[in-house]
Length: 212
Image (cartoon, rainbow, N blue to C red; front, side, top):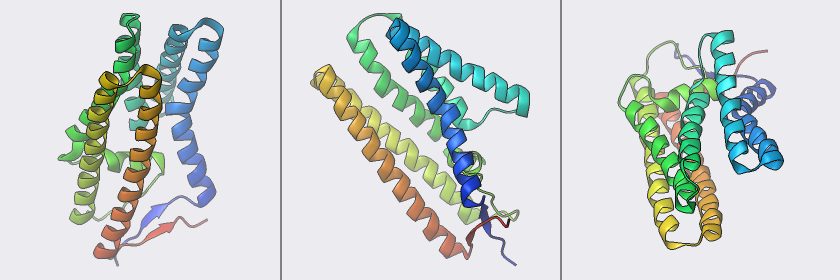
């Protein structure tokens, strides 16, 4: 009998995904906002960096491993903070945005051809997707392809933000970069989901919620 892919029940799924996003994005952003309000931008950057590294250490001590999304956020935030604090130059502050996306591109691309594509790891960690115990080459190829897709999305963002950084004023750049990032994230998520469901149908696999 062909095994199904399994997700946690809806409430647990929301809690799992919510916690994953909170520890990798919500916590450092909250620390940044509070510290920046109290003592300025640089203090906020340092507070956000400290918060995410402390969370990583706690995860390592308690569970023995650090989730991929938390690792990615820590690496990117460390690089961004170093760039911003290196100098007070405005262009270096803006450089952090295309640079962060380039780092994401490299992180996805370096795993896309291997046995553990990053999209598969993120699916297991962020939404607790359980794959069948039987290896499915077609499913593995999907995760490799989806990882390449996200590497391409971040590469497009890198190039787009680099052009905007040199051609637009800072305020316009921040507005357009935010809009472009959200648009590409939504489009990539939608495309990945539709692609995933199409692959499941072709392989004769089903996606179901775990039993109570």
